[in-house]
Image (cartoon, rainbow, N blue to C red; front, side, top):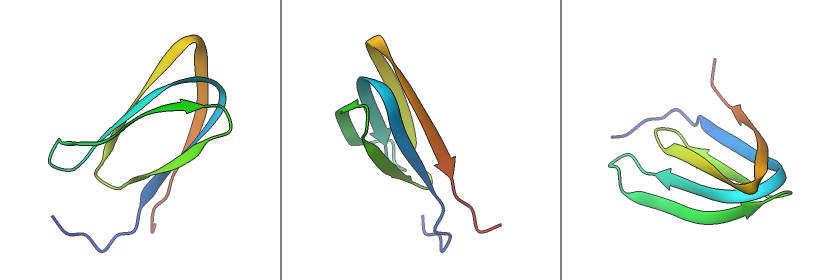
Length: 68
């Protein structure tokens, strides 16, 4: 699949820690990593992201860009 749209999701982890799992367009694993407060990452368009908190919780916010 090809798209000329440069949309993406920016995720910033504000508090706590956990795991993020990102799947690509075909369903394959693109990322499986531990995250903690102060970290950020970019998720490309058409990729899905699942965030799983540790026992102390995980607070984050995300911004989704768009050309519109």
